[in-house]
Structure formats: structure tokens, C-alpha cells
Image (tube, one colour):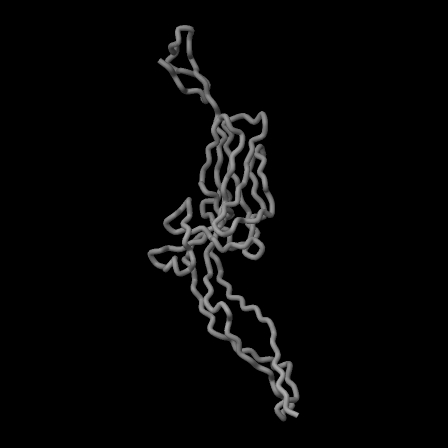
Length: 240
């Protein structure tokens, strides 16, 4: 008798672009219309033929796809911590690049401008750490006197939410203490920093825990006795 049997199969479509880690580009808009699939190795006896090859068509549910140039970045490039404080919270974001002079950034779903570079960078409100990448590690480039928490396999905030990292200077560390904090993403698409200290393109930022200087060169009369208020290079305030 006549009968009709329809088969379905899942299919993944990948469309890759090579990322130049030192040259940005605006989002790439790709439209997938439909795909036609055949299975020559699965021929069968049907339709009165012994070599019938099954085939079918499938329109993609999300036909329009945007490919972004991304990065992990701290809210600021440089941080200074007041002398009275030994810790600081640093916001981290996932951002993507789009130049509004050459691209329709609003159409690509980018609505929240970067707090660090508002002209061409946008906070990625659609980032999903599980599939789009996370911070594999965050650590000092050298030194090792700063404790960082969390510091490994850190999920990154989505919907524009920041990911907070706390940096604490170890007790007894001499101030001022200067350091560079480097972030290592677990996926290449999140690398971008042409000014990285080691030319690795890993995101980084600088931090200095400031020294609390006091008055120097002050005599009993309350005035400075020496024109060089202090021979201590960290204390340079004077009072008259």
C-alpha cells in the first residue's frame, strides 16, 4: 500500500571569521535563507527505485545572524586606591565593537554604550558565558602581592550586568604599590588589547595602591625649616 514517512535530523551551521587581534571591525551581518540537504550514502528502495537518495529543505529559524568583534575589558584602564584603603572592586564587562559612522549599530542589537570607550564599543547584553566565553584567569603580571577574587573560570555578566572582581593588597606591603592585572579569556574572540604589556593581546589594566604622605620638614614653630620640605621622595607637601 501507499504510505508516507517523513524523517527529520538536527543540523548545526557554522560560519567562521578569522579575528585580527589588533585591528577591530564592525559587526558582520549574515542572512541564511535556506539549506538543501541530501544523503547520498543513505539511498534506499523507494518510489520504484533502488537508488533513491533522500533530500529535503530547511529554512533556518534565525535567518539573520550578527558576528561581533569582542573583548573583555575593565571599566577603567587605570585605578588608584586611596592610602586608607587596601582593596578595590573593579567592574569587568564583555563588549563588542561597532563604528556608528560605517554601520547601523542599533540594528545589530547594540543599545548600551561602553563606559570606557563610548564612541565605538558597546556592552554586550547578550553574552552567555557557557557558550560565548568566560575569564579563564585573572592575575598580576608580576609582583604577587595582590589577592584577586574570584580569579579563575569566572562567568561574565549578561544583560549589561558587570562582573565584579575584588583586589586586595597584602598586609605589610610597602606603598605605593604599582601593578598590572592581566585577564586571560578562555576563547580567542574575547582577546583584544593592542597595548598589552607583553604583546599577548590579553586584556589588562593598571592599579596603584597610593602612599599616605605626611608633613615633612616641619619645625617647632609650625613652619618649614628647610626649602626641601622632605628628603623622603614620597612626602612633598609643605605648610607655611
